[in-house]
Amino acid sequence: MSSRYTDKKLVDSLVQKHRHRHLVGGLWDEIAGLQLKTVVRHGLTPGHSLLDAGCGSLRAGHLLISHLNPRNYFGFDYNDSLIEAGYRAELDADQKDRCPRSQLKVADVTQTLPFERRFDFVLAFSLFTHLDRESVSNGIKVLADALSTDGKLLATFFIAPDRTVDKITHKEGVVTFSDQDPYHLSLDEIREIGLRAGLSSVKDTEFTHPRGQSLVVFKPNS
Ligand SMILES: C[S@@+](CC[C@H](N)C(=O)[O-])C[C@H]1O[C@@H](n2cnc3c(N)ncnc32)[C@H](O)[C@@H]1O
Image 1 (cartoon, rainbow, N blue to C red):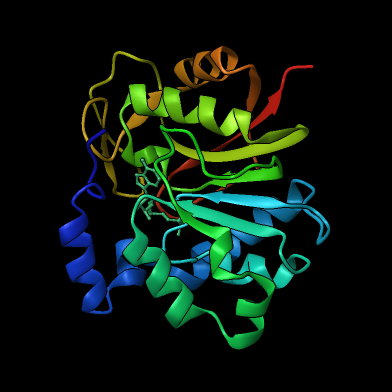
Image 2: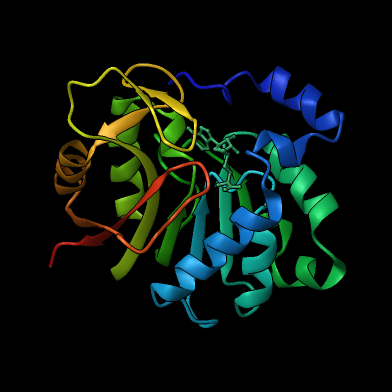
């Protein structure tokens, strides 16, 4: 796995300079609101449990924690410093009560997760856009195992028209690659990766993202 987030020392030093919002991609309020609106449109109610995969500094987390019933939000991220900055700087006392720090863990999406339960919703926003094909494939398998039998995984990707394209300049101005961060994948590849993990998938045609990411919704095959 190689992405801009694997250099923990660099991430830690930027977090110390209060750059945690910028590090997870900026557009803080806009993308937080987009994530909440999207997951609610896909059926999230306060009684559901949700796992935020690559939760970063709780950009979506701070809204989801208030939306969900207490203790229904869980998250994990590769970088503890991002989680810690989000918990310290972005949550008020009520939100900390609703989501104890122990529900936010350090973990790599390509490895076994430290949660001994399954979730109604798993959110993976701007996570797989930073991971290579093999890591995406491993990560989708890991997240499939975290889903309840009628659960949904909502994940964003940069989409390539087909698997042979090396470099794309998206109309929003972002440049993506087949072999370096930020990564793109074709819908065919995403569908195949999902099927190998026991998930069917569909692209959400209503979803629009300010940087041109697309949303794919995965469900366990019955
Ligand atoms: C662009 S940020 C998005 C964060 C969050 N999902 C959001 O929308 O605000 C990507 C996040 O993925 C995390 N990340 C990168 N690789 C990871 C991995 N292999 N496992 C878990 N988290 C990872 C990074 O540390 C970072 O917090």
